[in-house]
Image (cartoon, rainbow, N blue to C red; front, side):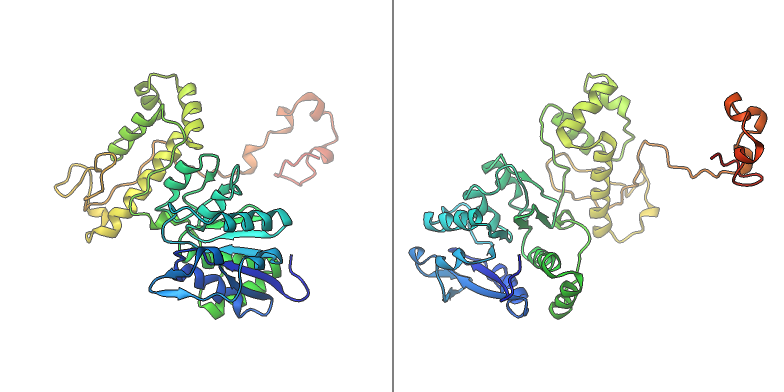
Amino acid sequence: MPTTEGHRVAVLALPGVLPLDLGIPVQTFGTDPHYRVTVCTDPSAGPVRSGGFIVDAPAGLETLRDADTVVVPGYQDPDTPLPATALSAIRSAHARGARLVSICTGAFALAAAGLLDGRPATTHWRDTAALQRRYPRIDVRPNQLYVDDGDVLTSAGVTAGVDLCLHLIRRDFGAAAANARARVLVAPPQRSGGQAQYIERFRPAARGTDLAPLRSWMLDNLAHRQTVDELAQRAHMSRRTFIRRFQQETDTSPMAWLTTARIDWARELLETTAAPPSNRSPGSADWAAPPPSGQPSTATSALPLRTTEPPFRRSTCTASHFPSPEQLPRSVHGLPRRARRRGGPGRGVLP
């Protein structure tokens, strides 16, 4: 929580800290009158080198003892073991009640400290699979720009740290303060969409593997008609069992999963083709089939988005849709006419 003397923010520069990730919280909070920012390092790890320069921080790990918020920027190699003293200081700060924030691969430091177990979290989209593989107890959210889990917050790569820092200002001091800071940074106060839009080839994630071969087949046949009944038959399951198992493995329905994959492929094709999508259709000379599962797309045509679900049709309601007094149940028909039709002639609104 903010203090009367300013919200104290400690930015912990770990070995190999990424320059932009380090600069984001310093720039965002450092010139905001609501905050007091201190950059610190772990003296036991020696000089912190990154991007051709050395971080000469004015403070050590003792800064974390009094910080209201501790920010851990990303660092170059998340596979490198971190100093035990730094991890211990991070744990102690959290146990004391400090808010923990990571930017990009800084999530690996929070995970190594055991602070992300059982929590939702994110990191740079290139490292989400590694984070999930190394720390399976984390609920990794690969598509989100940032995740706010109360006292622990994580952001995706690089500039997503700006989104998270503005979110913190909004949380601490309101939307007006966040919007004012965003104008100074020449950044959008709130960015729509997740980091899936930056992934070269996004595939909807799955937790289970029983239906993995079927999902691969679905991805290889995006341009073809696929129905739930046909997919269930291909999986050798009943329709109800198939839908339940698919939901368990992907947290979504088969058609929603298929639509996400089709939209992503269509986006990629639209970005790499010059001809209007309407000029292409299945079977035409310039129509390209989707790439085999697991291989990058080289298609240069557009995919017609189509789902097997019928379109939603808006219905209109007129007075003729309401029953006449003679059609009402006896218990209602016995009411006085004024009570039965309180809404006036033609409205048929019951009390």
